[in-house]
Length: 150
Figure 1: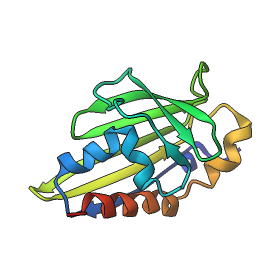
Figure 2: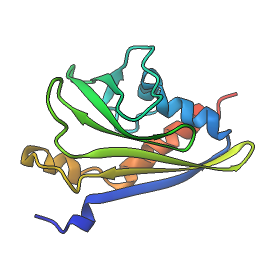
Figure 3: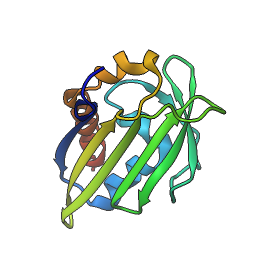
Figure 4: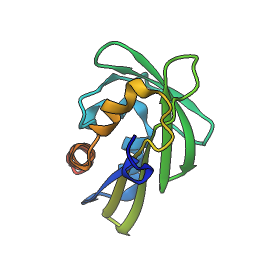
């Protein structure tokens, strides 16, 4: 088993768009498939915009499976984090998070982190290890492309 410190990976990117626009793309699950750099998300129902910790939103994966995403951290316009789980089950312990920093009225620094420190399901470890900073950066680059559309 790897050292727990190797179980947190992140990427950071600056986006030429207001932080409110960028955050909206992250906090609205229906928008997430447009910028998912892992090509893992197929769709999400509209009307699930995250507004608080404790909320659960669902997404459908490209393989047809559904995930319930348990929001564990939320500060409007600043930070959002969730732990995915199979429907009706407790999250197995990995977490996706985004932190935004407004660098001006139309520029935002976004940090995307994947933390699998508490991942208890050994069958998910190989996939967790494959979630590299480069894969997180791919999502951020696609997020940038969508956010910067005029």
